[in-house]
Image 1 (tube, rainbow, N blue to C red):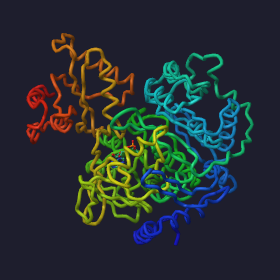
Image 2 (image 1 turned 45 degrees about the vertical axis):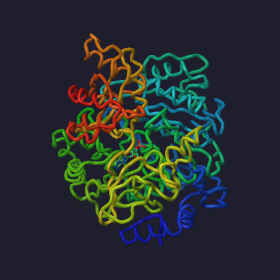
Image 3 (image 1 turned 90 degrees about the vertical axis):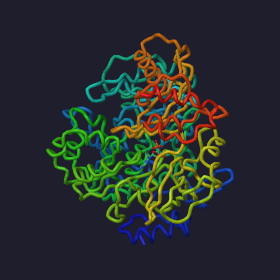
Image 4 (image 1 turned 90 degrees about the horizontal axis):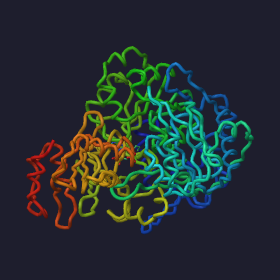
Length: 635
Ligand code: WT7
């Protein structure tokens, strides 16, 4: 039985059963047959559920770039590995072959070495969606440096927080970026961030927009001359299976962002395996994921998963609306895209526009459509299915997380019958469980519960950088010996899963994971603000938008409130980034609290949703009297 490639529903059920009955044997067979190892493992899985320590393929040695690049050189050297589509449609697309990718990664890796970077060092990458982003990521992996990619839409403060948490010694950035008709001064943001980052020694700068930037002597270096001078020969660093490959930050419901640590072997095996199956990838396909490499989707399904399969992966620099709302479909037609993977928020935005933007393009190359990042609503699902897939291309609604490293619950195209809004069935190796409030697993079907995973899988994050206790507390303490996802889910009569949304204080806005606490902290830094609370409310395009309740220090605040709203959003933009801006701000005289002083977000959520007639019992509150006032002020 070919475990690596699932071909139909019956095969899926067989493979799935095997993966649950004999997980170690299952993953061992996949690992052995489909990857290059410098040294085999001694044990497939080591799992201590008390300390939440997990190790896959212990004893093995490998390098992920040998698997993603070198091993393809002989058979696919002239095949396009990365197809770069620039922001401006008039600029030519760039086809980077596996051979060219190899040369460029090796040269870049030698530049890093020349600057003193060694195995285990952390490197922050803050780049737009240009080939150098993927190349820098792979160059780090080649020499064993741990990359920490920070999405280039984050602010200087968010960037410096992440650099300091991981104690990065280098930043790789560009002079700026193109985003639709705008340019963004990335280097300016980096300069501001670096005022507070004592560990940074060097900054490598890619020239993209040819702007006039500050070069700090001794610290900042243009990349191109260094790459030109570097040798194209760079042997792989031997990595242990559990050596960290990268850190990627995600917001939590409290505290500072969590640096999720992913390690080498398990992550490679799982991202490659799921890429192959969830997209039913075939040798001649041209695969396009519209995410940014700054998120986990880009790590696993633009860079590592596709390249490990020798695929052609598209990187698009721009936005869906530039030069007009037909751009995505123009790209699909131009490059004959076969798999297209995007977010529900993008689908909703595209669906709002004139259908002509779709109809003038030939989309017949498409075979599989994917979505990720948040629950997809039925209307958006049908629009995608009818107008993009023309009811011929199955939609894979893929549920997963930064922490899971790879797709966990998803249909297998042409095998799993799809139902709108259902992520359907767990992938092989994934054992979901629904839990009730008392910590008991809910058996049977037609049930709702908190979504957990009860057995380790190869690409799970191993820890939070520098804080294993927080990892245990966040993921392994709510339900004994199980990984808790933070999501709620429903299991229907056939065993299909539908993700119902977060059950904690994380809000998904346009597919971006935002914790309430850091935004509240940012708002509270405004001198006029005493206290604040954030909740989500439904939004047509973003899925959720943010609603802020803000208590001002001076109740008789005379300043123009609209100005104050702008200032508050300005502070959020500076501290976190524009993605965390609030859509609505209600100035309020108080916030409902429990007797122990915790803000009752449930009540604030109801009010923001316009459901203040369904608050339930509020008599146990510390201050039930403020509720009426908050309702009266509501926007
Ligand atoms: C959260 C994780 C995984 C890459 C992008 C997001 C939500 C993700 C789905 C889906 C319903 C989804 C969950 C999850 N989510 N995919 N198909 N259906 N919800 O990664 O930023 O770590 O966010 O996104 O709430 O917990 P992330």
